[in-house]
Length: 341
Image (cartoon, rainbow, N blue to C red; front, top):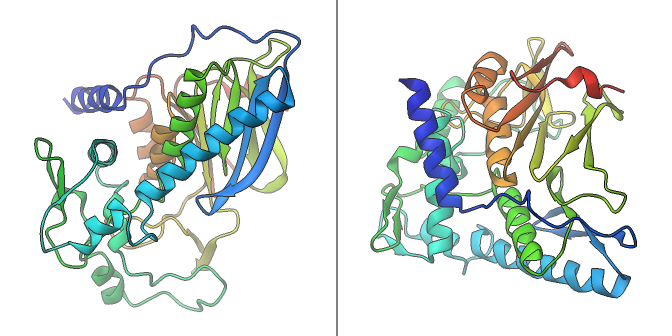
């Protein structure tokens, strides 16, 4: 029964997302080249690569992607007081807010992922009091009562959506939503979709590790992504080909604290207020960067055993997990051994 619920929910998610398979995209000619531009967007590093006939053509397409990512940032930003997301948060406990269909659908899909992961992923995590510090200043665990109080306004189940009116209501004063764990992936997906509609045959949108690919390299080979060894950031233990999909890695290589010989990551469990532990790297392969982004965060929170069990129930989704002992765990249908360096 649990598997059926998950499959039905994921089907709803994918239908709501509206992504079409790109397996029929015409492959680029050998004369084309890869052009890349690196810049800061959404507060993070973006590497935008396209296959094009000339630098002029590539720049035009990259500019198109940048404009789309900037548009998404203005839509979902919680830092911009005039964004629809901020207006939703400002009206928490006061009234529902009418928003554009695009943002409404993004919130609805996020809530589907929350259900799939039993709340390990939750956009209302933005309500959480920031009591954990990962800048080296913490010398002891926060008080248990303070941790419990930090999640008082968190809970995706509380969010009220009215599809007919296209409104969102946060019923408690102090509730907030945020897209930090899904926004870059969504922006990468939207940029990719727009570029494909403009005739770009192949490329990569790399949003600080949220990678979305389509087509093939000019030599006809698949794009490849390096899976970083979290115990040595300068090495990759595998180079995995990616065809028409996305891959996202969440890691705690730098942002963590250690108390009582337990390493706690900066990724907080929105249900408890405690940082996740036991995993140092989670890589998820999926049809969209938005979905992979959300699931990579969720796996970190759920832990290795539950995370893999949940991924194994999802069609066309795979994961690679490295635990805090350096052991590698994978979902059922991915064979990392044949890609190891």
